[in-house]
Length: 56
Image (cartoon, rainbow, N blue to C red; front, side, top):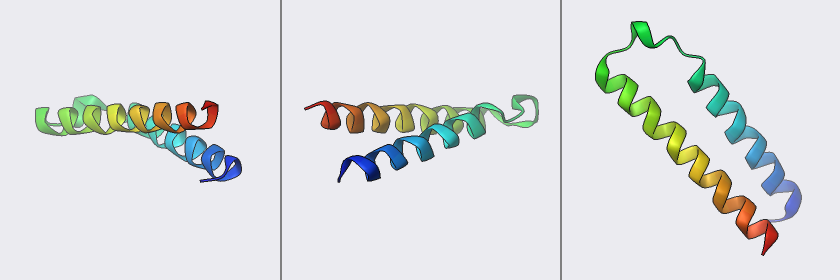
């Protein structure tokens, strides 16, 4: 993965995190909230991995 592709992936993941965080939790079931939180955590971990690979 080159630097440009990595930056694009980070931007896409950040946008997805913002989208997930903006969802109305009042309308979600407990399972949906847990699933959403897991996705956010997974995206943040992916960003950390990409950033650490860029800085290596």
